[in-house]
Image (cartoon, rainbow, N blue to C red; front, side, top):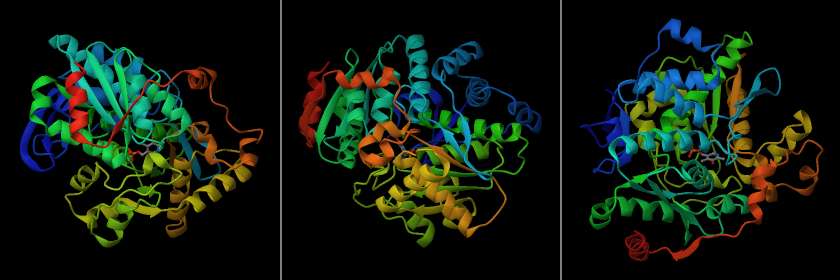
Length: 440
Ligand SMILES: *Cc1c(COP(=O)(O)O)cnc(C)c1O
């Protein structure tokens, strides 16, 4: 059985299904696996030639073989991961892992699609229904809306900060109906996240509904994100590159980076991780000073990373025994402002004919900074978390009119024509709560 503990109390232990539906332990900590299944040398060797769904199946199976029957787990990964995840080589040492070919054009599809199908599996078995609450700074909501749309037994309410997500992101959040509902909150992402946290701790709401989360705080979102690190590593090995890679991860709530460390704990060879952030740089500051100081978030061009109090920091910290010295052995932190981000987009477009989204540009900068401080021959991979077309307004006209500007797939761009169904709401828990109580 897979067991999980609360980061606030290592003695509080639950099974996987509880963690999946509860999201947060009652003590307001975060669930973490008690142990990571370590694959054998032989198993790692075999993974090198596997497809992404096959790698996903084997890794998921290592965690969940007692919870989900093999047949069904295979069906879940095949349905969830029906799009490519190419590793593109930019120069001798730098690779970019394109995680944005799913339906919302951002990497969060991977976690959301796996989690929704896993939930549907348990709900069908138990004949139950649930209500999911999600706060989003942009990409989570789109991935969740699309990943859970029409999934039986699940109703979803999404909260997003008014005016702080891109036009396409907003449409992805607000144009679906049936089991998907959207609230446009007059406040910041942190306000949205706070409203959701309050709802999870509210007794009356918990009596009325089985509430669940789909944010990166849910462990079922995190586990599948470890799969693509292994797929990236496997793609390098297939090209005959044996040296362990450096992964640069554009980070906000730090779910993505945490999942990379899960892969390492399962035995994947890694040289280092780079925590690349925009000016919301609490984690790079922590790595420098040893003090973690949450702050109000600052708006930037890489808005999905505008997080002042990263919710997965406790997990990251727990993975290193809450010891900054231990974390520094594997994780390097760098932060960049919008001016540097735009300059990086331009530089990579001009030298590689490759357009980065603003988040990905931060990761590219982070990898550059790492190599500058630690020259080596190891391969560097930075994660491309979104399609540039999702943030078209960020780019100067001359970049948008480049012949290699990547167009948004038609199926996705059509959504812009559809009307928004969002309800506008004050940042007020009492109003939010009464909305939820009325919405049965
Ligand atoms: C969510 C998101 C991030 C940040 O990922 P975390 O797991 O929260 O650190 C980076 N880039 C994009 C495009 C995102 O949507």
